[in-house]
Amino acid sequence: MDGYLVISIVVILAALLAAGGLFFMFRPSAKKLPPVDTPPAGGGGEEEEQGGGTATATLAPPAPPVEELVKPPEVEVPPPSAGRMVRLRARLARSQTTLGKGLLELLSRDRLDDEVWDEIEETLITADVGVAPTRAMVEELRTKVKVLGSRTPKEVRGLLREQLLTQINPGLDRTLHTSAPGERPAVLLVVGVNGTGKTTTTGKLARSLIGDGKSVVLGAADTFRAAAADQLQTWGDRVGAPVVRGPEGGDPASVAFDAVSRGISDKADVVIVDTAGRLHTKTGLMDELGKVKRVIEKRAQVDEVLLVLDATTGQNGMRQAQVFAEVVNITGIALTKLDGTAKGGIVISVQRELGVPVKLAGLGEGPDDLAPFDPEVFVDALLGEA
Ligand SMILES: Nc1nc2c(ncn2[C@@H]2O[C@H](COP(=O)(O)OP(=O)(O)O)[C@@H](O)[C@H]2O)c(=O)[nH]1
Ligand SMILES: [Mg+2]
Image 1: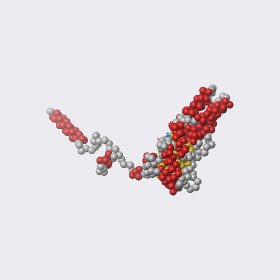
Image 2 (image 1 turned 120 degrees about the vertical axis):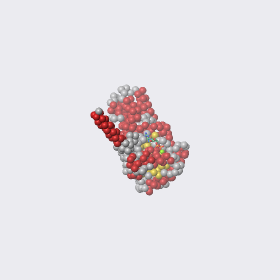
Image 3 (image 1 turned 90 degrees about the vertical axis):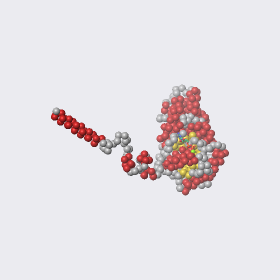
Image 4 (image 1 turned 45 degrees about the vertical axis):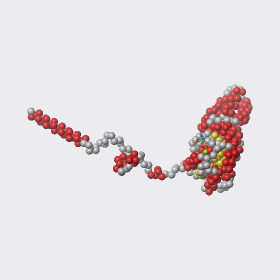
C-alpha cells in the first residue's frame, strides 16, 4: 500500500514538473523562435520598422545609393571606322548565297551552253546589278571562259571577282569630305526618301567620326515630326555631340543654318544636317531642299551631299533617288540595309545610274553597323572564302 502511495506521489510530481516545463517553453511571450507565419524580412525589415518608416517605405525596394541617382548620362567612346567592312562582312550573307554562290556554281559547270548563260544573266538581273552592267559582264565572262577552256574553281572565282570589281570600280574616290579647308567645319547634308535610314545613318556617322577623333555638331532639319529630332538627339547624347533643333513644323533651312553657325562657333570639325524625306511633290521637295542648301551656303560651303538609299527597295528606290539627284548635287551614296537583302548588285546599278560612288554601307541596326564602303572586301564577301 505504502509503496503504491510513494509511486503515485512520484508520478504526480513528475507530471506537474513536466507540465510546468512545457508551460515555460511555450508561453506566449517566449521569443526564442520567430512566429511561423511571418515571412523572412528581406534585408532588414526590422530596422525599417524601428526607423519608423511609412507604409510605402516598407513596401518599396531598397533605395539605390545616392551617387547612382545623380550620375550624368554616360558618354560612349565609339570605335574608329577603320576595318568596319571586314568586321561586318558576314552581314552580306544573303547576297553571298544568291549572287556570289549562285554565280560560282553556274560558272563551274562543265558545259556552259546558252541556257546556263541565260541563268547567269538572270542571277545578275535578280540581284539588281542592272541591265547594261549585266550584259557587259556576261559578254566579258563568255569571252574569258572561251579562252580558258576548262576551269578550276579558283580560276572561276578569279574571273568573277575581276568582273564584279570592274563594275564596282575600285578607282572611284570614296573619301567622305569630312575635312574642310581652313578654319570652318566640314558640312554634310543627308538627304533621301523617308524610312531609308537617314537619321540612323546620320547618328552612326557621327559616332564613327567621333571614334576617329573628330568633333561633330548635328542639325535636326527634319522638323516635320518632333520624334525625328528626338531620335537624332538620342544619337547625339550617346556620344556627346550637340544637336541643334528647332520647333516642330519650323523652317528646316533655319535649323540647318543654326547648326552650321553652332559648328563654326564651337570650332567643330564636322556638321551633319539630317533632313526630312517627304516626297509629296517634286516641286515641294525641290523648294525645301534647295532652300536648305542655299541657306547653309550663306555660312559655309556644303562639302558633301549624302544620298541615303535603302538597298532593299530596288528599282523603285532608284527612281526616287533620281529625283533627289535632280534637286541637289549628290556627292556620295550611303547604301543602307545591305544586311537584309540578296540584291547586293544594287551597288553597281546605283553608281552607274547616279554617277556617284557608294561611300558608306549600312549593315545592320546596331550603332556601329555603318562602314566605309570597300569594293574589294564587298566582292570577297559576296564570293565567300577563296
Ligand atoms: N537592317 C538595317 N536597318 C537599318 C539600317 N539603316 C537603318 N535601318 C533601319 O531603318 C529604319 C528607318 O531608319 P530612319 O533612320 O528612321 O530613316 P529616315 O526616315 O530616313 O530617317 C530604322 O528602323 C532603322 O533602324 C541598316 O543598315 N540595316
Ligand atoms: Mg529621319
